[in-house]
Amino acid sequence: MSGETTVAVSNGFMVTMRVPARVKQAVQQALRERGINPRMVMIRMFVAAVLLAIRDHLEQIDLLTIDEEYTGYEATIKSLLLDRIRALGYEFPRDDIVITRIGKNSLAHWAAIRVTRR
Image (cartoon, rainbow, N blue to C red):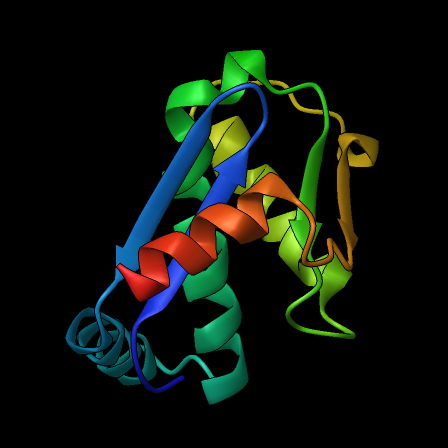
């Protein structure tokens, strides 16, 4: 949870986003004050970062593949993300969100590395 986080999306378009450590700490504190357990704080922040990266491109996305960051929380991540996508007014089938190891050869991984290294 420490340090900066980089989120990258590649799907005919490329979006990268950096979340500074101070922003993560402020969000973490606010969520904990609301009684959300520490592990779910990380999951919710991950889902929010993914949503921010894809929200302007939801109409273009047929399949969303997310790198497996939180083993055992795949169903929770899908549910939270689908809730947020649907709250934005988009229908997105649950089966069109896949959580798996993406690998170092994906464009999203390459973009994240480039942003992280500046």
